[in-house]
Image (cartoon, rainbow, N blue to C red; front, side, top):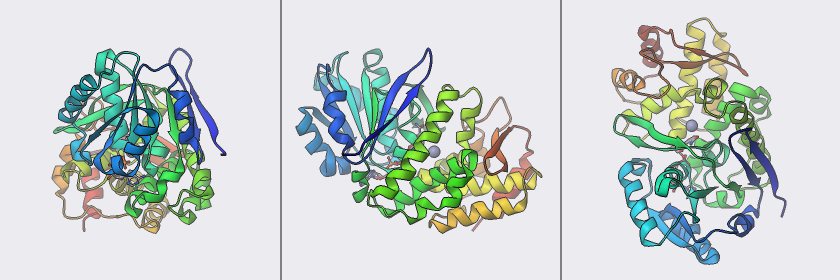
Amino acid sequence: MTVQTLSVDIPCAGKYPIHIGKGALELLPSVLEGASSCAVVTNHSLARLYGEALAEKLGAAMISVPDGEQYKTLQTVSTLYTQFIDVGLDRRSVVIALGGGVIGDMAGFAAATYLRGVRFVQVPTSLLAMVDASVGSKVGVDIPQGKNLIGAFKDPLAVIIDPSVLATLPDVEWRCGVAEVIKKGLIRDPQLLESGLYQRAQPDGGELAEGFIRRAVQIKVDVVTADPFEENIRAYLNLGHTFGHALENVSEYRVRHGEGVGIGLIAAARLSAKVGLCAPSLAHQVEQLVQSVGLPTRLGHYDIEAIYAAMGTDKKRQGKSVRFVLLRQAGDPVLRADIPAETVIAVLDGLRG
Ligand SMILES: NC(=O)c1ccc[n+]([C@@H]2O[C@H](COP(=O)([O-])OP(=O)(O)OC[C@H]3O[C@@H](n4cnc5c(N)ncnc54)[C@H](O)[C@@H]3O)[C@@H](O)[C@H]2O)c1
Ligand SMILES: [Zn+2]
């Protein structure tokens, strides 16, 4: 077992380990030591694949919810509270969030609010959740007005990233995770883009995957450690997300998060070039990267005005203006809240089809 441990360590706030490597799941019993009881929270598909066996091994209760972003809602959280009570979770219990970002966000939010907060462990099973959603302590749910508009900061007890589970991850979900890796390269580590590591890696949880997962997680750790509550540089992690979240929302979540991020990265780079912040060649490079992993590069048939309107309710807005993360070059992001609506709409228009 070659598990390596990174650590989020924020003075006056939280500290928790991130265990990464094949076999990391074996560490769960020691992480849970001292808990009065535990519940594995997952979705129906992952319950069959991993959840039931894990709950049995840990002597934990098993709770599952329907699979999909459309269920990342307060209604589902409410069913979780009921089941937490039914299985007898108390203040010394631990919730184990086993799944992709949807489960991590939602089970984490339920844990943050049940009995004013019980402990929880993140066990991400999708590439996207491993490299992004499980680290950084943001948990929450969607409401009809927009994504992640209800939420909390809640540190997990630990994050356990065991790439073995990637063996069952569908290809399309692998690609979605790569979108968040490209994002990290664009804001912080241009070499990660050049290395092409993530393109060669097979979705089998092999050593190659482990290497770039660790590197992507380290970037997130560095950023959230420097700015845990998104007062400044953490906002850079939202590159592509103002566009992406709006598209997800308008598509009623038929567009996956990672797909929205991929298209959003292209839109953000094009917008950066349009306002003269970066060379047009960067926008081409971003588009090629997104295309090379097989992610969609166009908005499809969704209504441009509706997408623009949805950006107005995205959390990234400040006051009345929409705030964008733009790029001066790869590795050099900047926040801008002064972009005229016509300019944004022109960029969206160029991505039709
Ligand atoms: N909290 C944060 O900081 C943060 C950051 C990024 C994204 N997010 C959130 O994460 C969510 C997206 O996460 P996601 O892309 O993981 O989506 P997801 O949770 O819907 O998972 C995608 C699909 O893959 C399946 N799956 C997951 N692991 C699997 C495995 N090992 N084998 C087989 N199938 C598997 C899931 O059942 C699901 O059908 C969005 O809601 C987004 O807002 C949160
Ligand atoms: Zn994201």
